[in-house]
Length: 440
Figure (cartoon, helix red, strand yellow):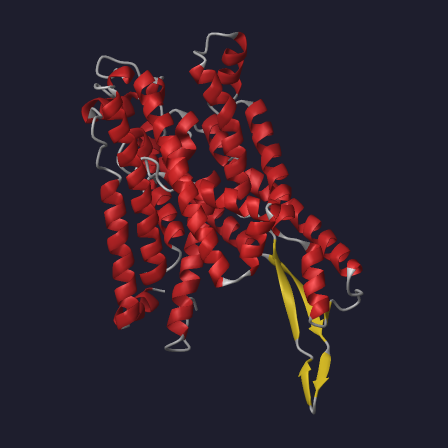
């Protein structure tokens, strides 16, 4: 594998793409440490050190590479773009105009991408305003109160002009991240947004691992440190195995005579992944559980229902939270697969081009067969997603780790998924020059 890396850097155009991608990553990480104008950086740093990393903002903070709680210019990260992409993907099924654009090919895809950018800007303005309001009220670090940390002193000047400047800067930061991601896609290696998401998640690994070492009591902390690394390697292997697993449904195309020539007669297959929904169900479930905790926090937490929510749905170690989280992931896995894969449409396309599944009649029987297979493989995929997502909560109970447990949940799915996709793209570009691939 190291030899393949050396060959990749010896190839001029591939080396140029790799260095360009690394340069964009460096710029992205620099922007994640530049504070927004009007924020007391010393106070933010003190509150971050004293805070127990409130799980309420854990998901967004992870996607921003830790920039959210530090209130930097890239504080929103790529979360607005991810949310906008998911919304447009769901609306494509509901709105006929978007569905027609999707079928137009490259021109329609470019139009949908433009709509995604507009929606990203709108969501950025909304989220930046909410984040600044949360910081001004002191709710961003509600659990961090000490002699050096005053959560309400994070924004010393709360005038309207200062708030507008902060919103504009954060929105511009999200727009810059969008631009950097598109630059990587066009001139670098891999999908730009996925690469930046990978960098954001992976940047928190060293600090999280070292925190486990500092908090450990066995063998000076080294025993839990290496135990977590061993668990992480096992989980990476499991995730790679499941992410690569697929059910291949054979498809045979009948021969057609056009003039004196015979066309068709080929055999292929429809690959149905075990985890067809990817990471989307985990994001949906986390976002839905985020809402009641946010409402309880802004209500002041004095009423009985607010206290009940904070006790059961904030920290993540309560059995009711785990069960609800797991069931939501399973539900959203089936929901997302149902709206993104249409068996009737696939069966009609196969029938149109003379394709059929051996032993299954074309048309409606094919659609019913595809739906049956899809339901059967979605069950293990959804259960797998639920179990992986619960790893941080289990670690919180067993090891007293924080919610940013490195090898679990959304983080491990993102790192393995993006890593596999990027390796495949490097592999394909290397195979254009020699037959010896990136992975042997």
